[in-house]
Amino acid sequence: MLVVIAQIVIILIAFVMLLNVAAIMVWVERKVCALIQQRDGPNRVGPYGLLQPLADIIKLIMKEELRPKSADAILFTLAPIISAVAAFAAFAPVPFGAQTTLFGLLDRPVGLQVADVNVGMLLVFAIASMGVYGIVLAGWASNNKYSLLGALRSSAQMISYELSYGTALAGVVLIAGSLSLREVVDGQAGAWFGVLPKWYLFLQPVGFVIFMIAGIAETNRAPFDFPEAEQELVAGYFTEYSSMRFAIFYMAEYINMATVSAMATTLFLGGWHGPFIPAEYGWIWFLIKVSFLLFFYVWVRWTLPRYRYDQLMQFGWKWLLPLSVINLLVTAAGVLYING
Amino acid sequence: MGETLLFYVFSAAAIGTSAMVIGQRNPMYSVLLLVASFGMMSGLYVLLDAPFIAVTQIVVYAGALMVLFLFVVMLLNRPSEDDGDWDVAHPLKRPGMARFGAGLATLLVVQLAWALIRTTRLQDAVNGTSDGSSASVRTIGRVLFQDYTFAFEATSVLILVALVGGVYLANREESR
Image: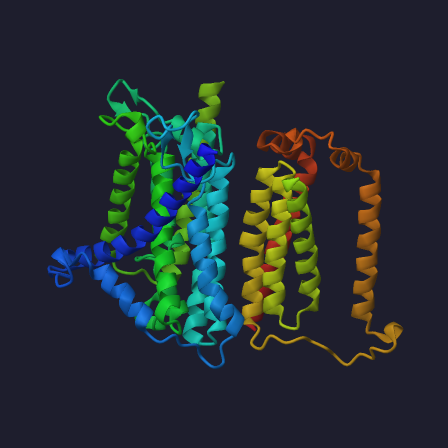
């Protein structure tokens, strides 16, 4: 019984954390953007503008909900829901801490994770790839040419980069010998020569770079934000959306970023393992690593200009995919050589 | 108990959504209902202790294949049923294409029935004697890349041929 309650609490914690990530990232994005552009950024609402996300949310709730007359009513409503559900569900198999008894409260330890699935890695990949339906449906149901173009670009981009993304995952699967995210993290415990942590980053540096690039493309962030390229497509697939429906798309984007960062942490940066902090407080390391990767995302967005669309496709198919296949072959040969 | 209930829920939903796929006038809804149907099938695989197959079903069919379908449907400007001018009252007077399709569908049903009667694994599954080990990643890999290597490679060549054909056709259209 207690274990069930503990599991429900963990699920609630994960859910609320993801909601908060979206709010905090809105502030971080605006503040970092401002600092990079040598401005002050939000500084009126609360200390350092910290309450700005709250003001934004109230503004969005108060706005009028609009739906174009010629839009497909059912799909127009369904699209943001699909986006949000896919974004939340994709985080479920990601472990964010070691097994714990919650300070001796439970008889047997539970993992800090919503669902311990033995094919967790594939599950994250599968659910994340369902998110494209939200974008495509939004673009089509709006009955607007800019929305449709944004949706088409998005699906082409996500299909192209999913291949490299999946191949980068396969390299980690080969080394870890498991599809379970918990086992992948456990394989990265300890350190080589007592100094260098046994992170897969050092065994799969190329895989990590490919994963991060493909992750940016998967989450439609700059410099790959073609689905919503303002100068060309107004706002892309959510041009016709307003009020809370718009907010849900926005939130789904940040949650997807958090999931990709959490996956990168789990697969390449040793998950909750790290020096100085005892294992039961490993979630602190997890939060530090994910926060750094999220900051990295924002940093990249405000530093690099957007590519051209054909450049993006050429880069994906002619450079990233061959590179990831070579990486996979080399990894496979290495694993075969060492394991005999 | 719970598993049996879930089985009936997933099966009913899978059959229901599949039936609705054919009943839709708007092809966009058909595609989405098919995705829902694949999702329900994937739920059935989980109940069969085959999570790898369940996730593969989502990645390959719901995630990749159906997005391409959606693409095609979206690019057709006005999605509407192509109702043609056939005489519905006389099924035998339907155009050749429809008759050919009906023939193929009948053939498929016969093949499926034949395969289901012949296979022994189905009996195992019904009797609950299958241990679920036939669905692990390792076993599937062994079967696919050792026992049935030829069929696997032949399929990949077939797909490559289709791909080359598609590119050739698209290029010819363009140069015209």
